[in-house]
Length: 194
Image (cartoon, rainbow, N blue to C red; front, side, top):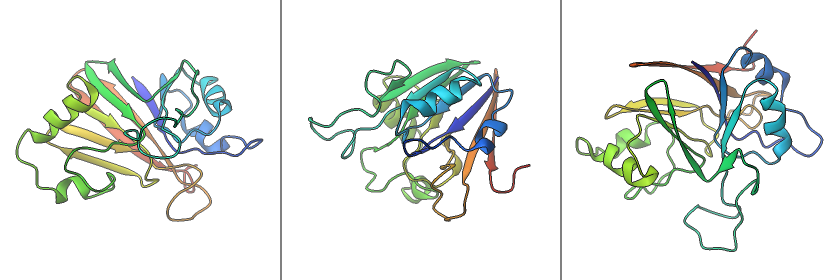
């Protein structure tokens, strides 16, 4: 199974998802959007390629913030604050902002390793967060592309195709390939993809 991963598209009203994203996702079986959506038109456009599931974010702050904050794209059946998907024998947790107890930082490259967690502490934290064991976490928010494995869990942030931190015209997306017992991920730099 080939899954397109994207986050933080944040296109403005009237703007389109970059054509490079559409080309990169040709032939995928599903698309997971890790939040920072801005408008449901983004999901509609992606859904022309493959079925879409998305993580919304709480407007105005962290998910733990009290109401009256609203969920991004509330009412869209494709969007939830977090989602858990069982695909090809893998359990994927999909979320925009992943804030774990004991972590004062957003999950950017190198942050998990810097915390020197005891063995199996991370799987337990994630099980509490998602309500079940996960072996893959797809997240967004930071705009930094990241692929890291810690304590058997694969963390993927596809970065942003439209707001990359390196300030080039285009950013990145990712392709996750799943088969039972195997998971491979490839980041795609949209500025250099052909």
